[in-house]
Structures are given as structure tokens and as C-alpha cells.
Length: 188
Image 1 (cartoon, one colour):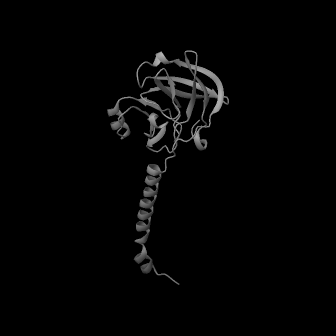
Image 2 (tube, one colour):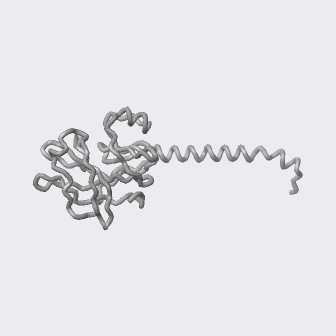
Image 3 (tube, helix red, strand yellow):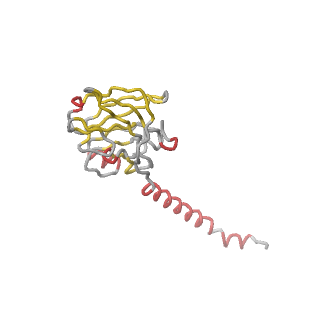
């Protein structure tokens, strides 16, 4: 079959239409994946490390108080955060009626540092996410992680929950004794 220039120009309009439809299809796929493809926090599989004293329960006297620390597992030092929660979660630690949980501060999207965000208006304006309690937010690509849902990604590009830190009580100290590996080789 031989095409003339005139015939080719008659069908030239299909190129931008196909490109537009392809772009819209990709955006719909990406939006669906980021919105509905998030992995839930399951049963933790901790990598054991040396016990590390993080804080005493009275050091975090207010709900949503936090303490940053670094935990070393398998020769890697991972920045983490200990939070006092207002209620128990499946993997939180209870100490004299107070609840504590700790998470890696390495975002599961591209490895940026996650920060506790206590100002609910800042969460709404900066991260475009409405929450009724403080969250952990990644300032690089604006993913939001919910500490009351075991560090699950609830908004943004991150698909995986933050790795959890295993906590124990030893005497008066809250001690870190293990850390979940980063999901699918993401982050540190």
C-alpha cells in the first residue's frame, strides 16, 4: 500500500490525539495506583539490633510529644522518631497508661526525612491532607503517614508504610530492640 503526502496529512491528526489519550491513560493509572495501591501495615518482621535506650516515659509527658534517635541495625544507622500516642495501636507499647510507637524517619517513597507535623492547619495547607490529629509528613514529595494506623501512608506518592521500631520497657527506659526492613528496597 502506497501513501501519498496528501493521504499522510489526512491522518496526521491521529498522532496528537493518540499522544493525548496515552497521557490521560497514564495519569489515570498513576492516580489510581497512588490513591488505591497503598500497602497496609501488616504483621511486623523486625530485624534485631542492640538494645538502645531512647527515653523514659516521663520524658514524653504530653500526647504527641516526640524524641528523635538513630537506631543501628545490620551496620546501618537509621534516623527514627519515638511518639507518645493518645491511644493504643496494634504495635504500640503501653507504659503506665501511656502509649508509645516508634518509626523510621526515612520516607518509603524516595528516602527523604519524615517529620512530625503537629499543626493541623499546616498539614492541610502544606500536604493538602485533612487530619484530626498530628501526622508524620515528608516535605520532599508531600506524603503523609499516620502514626495511629501504624505508620501507613495515607496520602501522597509513598505506597508503603514507614518501618516500625520494636520497643520494650527495661526498668524506667523505653528501649528500641529491632527495626523493620525498608519495604521493597525503598529508602534506607
